[in-house]
Amino acid sequence: MFDQTPTELAASAARDIAHLTGVDQHDIAVTLGSGWRRAAEHLGTTVAEIPAEQVTGFRTSPVQGHTGTLRSVRMDDGTRVLVVGARTHFYEGHGVAATVHGVRTAAAAGVKTMILTNGAGSVDPERTPGDAILIKDHINLTAQSPLVGATFIDLTDLYSQRLRDVAHSVAPDLDEAIYMQLTGPHYETPTEVKMLRGLGGDIVGMSTALEAIAAREAGMEVLGLSLITNLAAGIQQGALSHQEVLDTGKNAEATLGPLLARIISAVSSSR
Ligand code: HPA
Image (cartoon, rainbow, N blue to C red):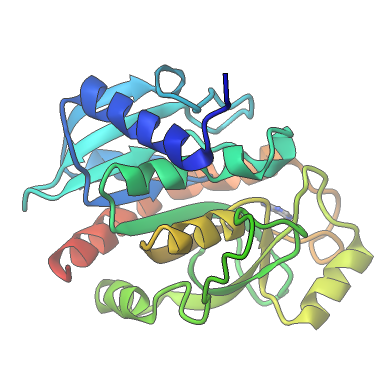
């Protein structure tokens, strides 16, 4: 028996989603990171919500604060949104293909617009934890790629200027930042944070960049949003903790949910 390729696995997962939700095709997908979870409630009518582990290649997240379902939501304008509440992080040790399986599944389910959200630390001391920010570009510091072989994908406009303009049309105050992905799961040392600032990035996290690359390979337009959950190591007073990241996420949820829903509505109208 040969193993399935990542594309075949994503196609199987998309068939599972169609079967379990009764929705054959989705238009927009959104992956919910720390703090963004409640967006689904504001988007429209939940048609179905399924445990992630019922879908090929998905697993329940072992990380506290990360939910584990896939939801199919119908917006008032009829747009179908696939809300991916189950993310496999690279640090879980299942490899890059597993890390981007959610994104490839979205593409196989018909999605043309991939919205990636996360919680991130700020290496810029001027930023405020609790604020949301648009991702303008990334620096992939994982030394990994989801692409295998001679797959020379252009990333010039990876975090689509068009979609950032759409987001700004409903949230003009949103700043933009360069996101840096490290593998984690440890946080950075203060010296690494100084280095990261020197590299030209603004915020740092453990997801999103690899997913964005896979999304672009699959032909989707990408929008990225971060919640600043903390100032990075050595910038804030005292130690970092996952609990602090979760707490900031929890406190921001009530504003981030409606904000993301507004942005997704605007994205939907712009299609
Ligand atoms: N570093 C890396 N990843 C993170 C951080 C951080 O400070 N905060 C949330 N995710």
